[in-house]
Length: 342
Image (cartoon, rainbow, N blue to C red; front, side, top):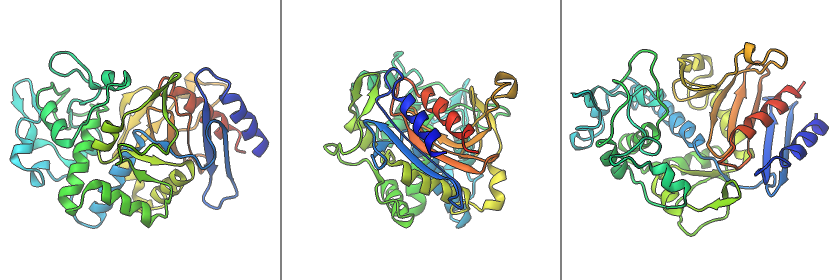
């Protein structure tokens, strides 16, 4: 298996704009436990995990639920001020702001617009600016203020509807602060210490760049203002990500025997579906009849970062190709690795 992984990892960096990659594949008893890095990334390299931070935020919410510090069906209005809530979700003239619950945010079924990828008033998209290198801070106060000006997609909890929007997990981060009385970056820091994730941290220093630079094609994307403003953007390693995902699927945050309760899947964009705080990658058999692709549950990020559990094979896989322009390469590589783990 090691030789097969070596071949796959040597091939991935030959693809256009893939300058480095690291992948770690393991199972619970470590009868499979292989890591390989190539190009400008090493086995212990720290990298930006992008939207896998949503997985961490969701996990903390689930843990707070199990500790009876909140209920998943609680309305946001129980924790947020009326100033924060008022006008947050007005759809077709009706104000649904007080109807939004925690579970709506966890499952991306709130209908709230995304402050990053949806059009703001005036037609601009914040993500376009960030990808062009126009760095800017996005505090939760700014997120809420701008979202109130934007158009929601559907009423909260509308059956069969889900929309991928970073807004949900930014508000969940604020909720964590309200419930615990501790800033979310400190809650995350404490979690990393509990799990002994020694090379993982929340980005909080505008001058600190000790991780592999984020790439968009051949261009380095430098966004210190944005990354430090969210208080939940995370720098980590493939090994530390493995520690987290094994902890999650073995019941550290939510009981292992109840994890199926989170499998309330709604389509977001092909080939992804979203459950309660978790993401599923699923290619139907008819689209890959000769090379069956098992479903994977976990989360990915826009930079080619992945952290998934493959139930059919009982293996976990983490890593990154660190390329914002081609995150699909990470999945192609991951599929090859998984299908060679026999």
